[in-house]
Picture 1: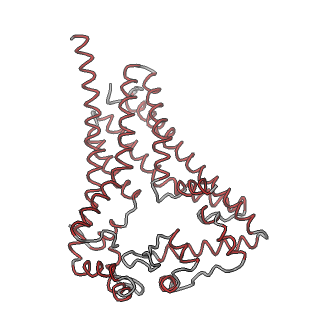
Picture 2 (picture 1 turned 90 degrees about the vertical axis):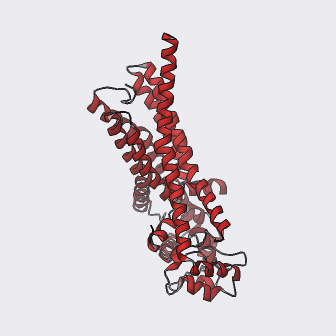
Length: 392
């Protein structure tokens, strides 16, 4: 049961790679490849076979670079930064000092509790520009290289293969960065970086297109893909969760893993879960082993060292934690009002799980079926033909 809950939780997290992986490789790619063949086979079987091969190479080749290239480049860059002598895990958001965190604040308050970590912070404090340049280089490498591979090299190799195979058949027949910008790009999630590479991929694909009609079709297809991959799933999830509240009178704002956690449910029943109302960072530092602090580690990306000391090199997103506290408070209130907390939690898990699966299915249908059909309709309108404009 826990494996199933963890899987549903992963694919329901639109800030992670998991839903993109499911939609892209398991649903979208095979359906789009099949539709491409069917569309072209209406008038020409040979072109349909070529379109099938090109689309399969395009979709799965892009997926391999898209899903694996960025994490791989990030690891290689992190390795290089460590070799130079800096810890790439230090968050540049700490360059901006605030009331509860910052480079100087963390050095002063964690020097005894985490001496090794604060030594790394001191080195960054003395060499801000060098560290910013390294992070900027990491961002460029982890996005520019996948963009080149997906948007420029892969299409040329793909089109070149078609040209070569056609020729063989013919032969046989005949015979500078600022601190705030660095802070932003260093905190981009992998899906954020994938979205940026998709912009570059779109430019490359359009530029590499073989004629005007293929350029128009590619621009339409890539724009739709980015909208349906990065924006629509969040809209759909919010809509489904809102409908659930009204139809089933059930709060589903929390992660299914948390709602399935027996200790969390027991804490609600016994009124033992303490939620800080203010000074969140201070509470976490003073209560590293509290139930709430553990929740921030699991659900709000608060990092700790081995001895339960908060990692001073990491940035704490207070706004995210405040929203998390509000969601927990609302859930507790509604669970208690239901009269049966355990029954309410089980119902919420079922509703949330259904919403996540429905989101994956509906967004996949939009990507894998509706977008290709719309593309075919656009092709017919502009060219008057059924076949791929680059193969005609």
